[in-house]
Image 1 (spheres, rainbow, N blue to C red):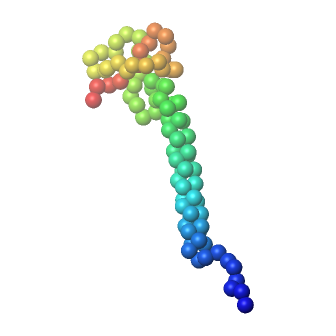
Image 2 (tube, rainbow, N blue to C red; image 1 turned 120 degrees about the vertical axis):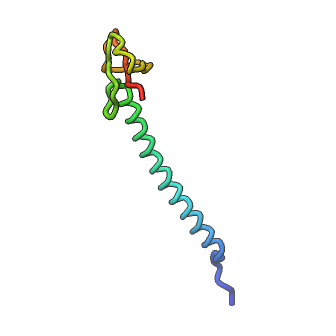
Image 3 (cartoon, rainbow, N blue to C red; image 1 turned 90 degrees about the horizontal axis):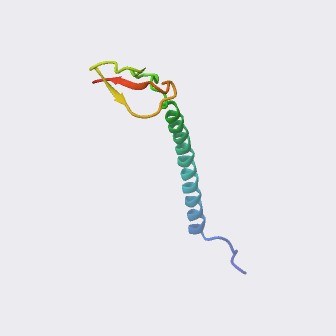
Length: 88
């Protein structure tokens, strides 16, 4: 009688472990893509001087000693205005 031919048990176990690792890596990668998309959305909204949660203002003259200028181009400031935020 011939012995049945089949995959050794250790090959089956290794294949199962490899499959589990691939599933875990896929889940982690998909989660990171979501975080990346969230970060991109936040960068797009940071183009506003008076963004939500800030006390920054657009002003043409210097608003006074209690403010410092924020560098950059902001969508909500006109060409002659600069963005200012209160000193901490």
